Amino acid sequence: MANCNDMFQDFKDKISIPKTKREHLKKGKDGIETRIKNYYKNENENQPTFCQQGSYALNTMINPLDEEYDLDDGVYLQHLDDKKDNWPTTEIVHKEILEAVEKHTDQKNEDLKSCIRVVYAGDYHIDLPIYGEYGGRYFLARTGDEQWVENDIRGFNEWSRNKFKDSEQLRSIVKYLKAWNDFKNGEFTGILITVLVGQYHEEFEDRDDESLAKTVQRIIANFKVNRKVLNPVDSKENLIEKWSDSKIGRAIEALENLHEKALEAINEKDKAAASKKWITVFGTRFPEYEEEKEESKVAVIPLVRDTRSPAPPWSQS
Image (cartoon, rainbow, N blue to C red; front, side):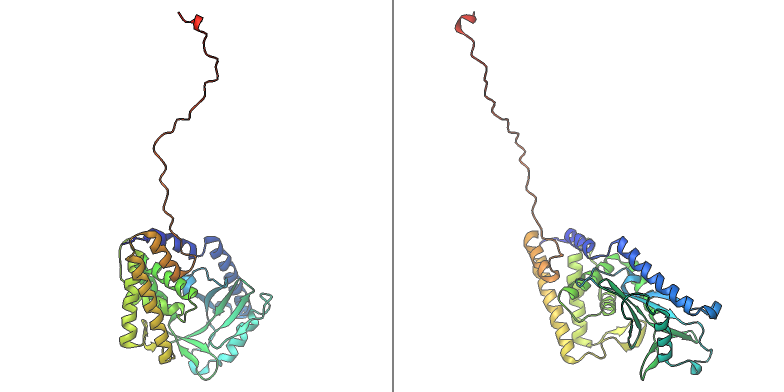
């Protein structure tokens, strides 16, 4: 059986964002937060607070193939009335955040149903979901009929961090599945992958390849039996509630194909053949194994022609 764990470590390094890029993204995020705080400067101590969300906050972000990074930074309004019934409509607070970040970049910002999106052309975008707090619970501003919807993203961040604290391999498997989903143009969101791996991860010490195969096998079993994925911090929320039966079927088929290829790679006799199997799963970002050619240990002594004239016979005694 081929052990490709070392190649998975190289692959993880390649898909993980470098420190310089993280600093660049943080600079953009900090600039937006400053703009929003300045917009609410008359609120004094009631200026908004912020909470990083998603893959950036959990250190599961990967380099996307389309080269556009996605950040999430929650805006927590502090100036809302103590009575939730007196809160403004979500359309009003969306309009305020839009005004706060207006012309922050050269691109037109977007007012989406669940957030405001600030776009940095050809580089990344930052989504700004907006929250209010009431009675120790958090509510997301969704425009339209839903308005203020209870949503505990801080609780999800804590759940995720506790999972990663117990297993760094779990974080790696999340990254591998994100890279697979990206390469295959899959339908899995980052939060869905994080939840599935967090719930069904199978630990294999020093064998990320085997851990990935077993984890995917357990995820498939859950899909087939339950056909739902519950939010670990809100059991009333099914993360794939809006998925049709055909979409669930496509997801199961994609996972089964991944699992089949993973087993084929693991069961290969040599790493060169195994790496080719993994490349069909992840694309060319996964390294192709090249066996090192052993240097010859036999010293070769070059033959040197003696150009000196031979000694005449009479010179010999």
